[in-house]
Length: 242
Image (cartoon, rainbow, N blue to C red; front, side, top):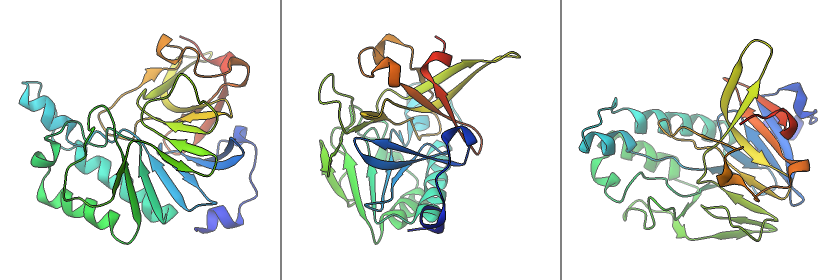
């Protein structure tokens, strides 16, 4: 485990550190400014919604985007793996934008992904975009994964909130300041469940005030851990706008 986790005395989230320590279902989780999360007690890193090859998928349908999203996403992923040095990586579904994505990934990008997976346990959680991840990549495939009091799945459930770690909704927070309104990807939590932001380069976000989030959190305990360029900002629900 890296020195940051071993040696840091965790400060209040309002201090706007590159990593924010929270507790979900009694488990300490480090929320990283990149959008990944880390569980120090199990040496596990979590990412969600990589949507690899989204750009090439859009190109097939005549919507031209720069074809570099996979390379950008993998570079960001490599950076955080190098930092956290996890023994296990859990990818919370929609890792690939569609079921043909692996046919379009450049050979170099496949090599990078394979190198990131080498020497560690890797779990692909099935998503709605990739219910069956591509064969031949290695790793384990699961619809859900239980780890202590936590349960990892792609889509948040209307029930079983305690300990749920999910993705799918691409949460974003909108905050009004005196000068302007800021909208950024975020982690969303009330201490019972955690929804991760999307990690992919072209994935965007959905305001956590959208009705898609209705009923998922206890409003009085809801917080957004908003991603800055190199900091995480803790914003309480009362300061979030639609």
